[in-house]
Image (cartoon, rainbow, N blue to C red; front, side, top):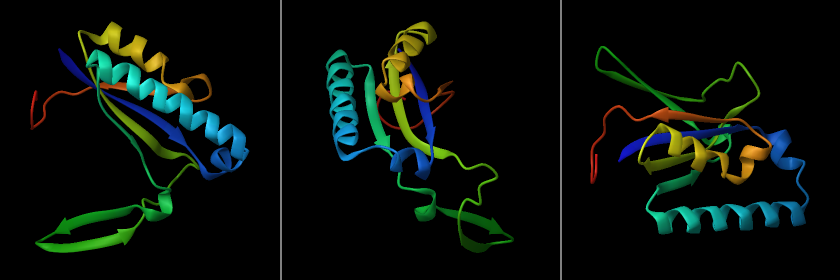
Length: 121
């Protein structure tokens, strides 16, 4: 089994465009995806991230730690969701990523995980 990181980008305008009913449907679709692929063992984790205003950037220079608000975005999109997939191969990871509910609206980047730490790494 190989591991892959699937990433979806979003922005505040996109999320704000959903009605309460549309948002509830999107959450239900995401929960169904999570359940389906946890059952197959191909979803190791799914994470929705907070808005960019909650992110911080940490830099260490000459032993001094600096924490700043950010990231300061060059574009209006930011990483909104991340999934860790464990699939037989890249082709299967792409098939699973195509079933992520927001894939019908947003691009999903799929990156092979080159190395890691923890169970199954």
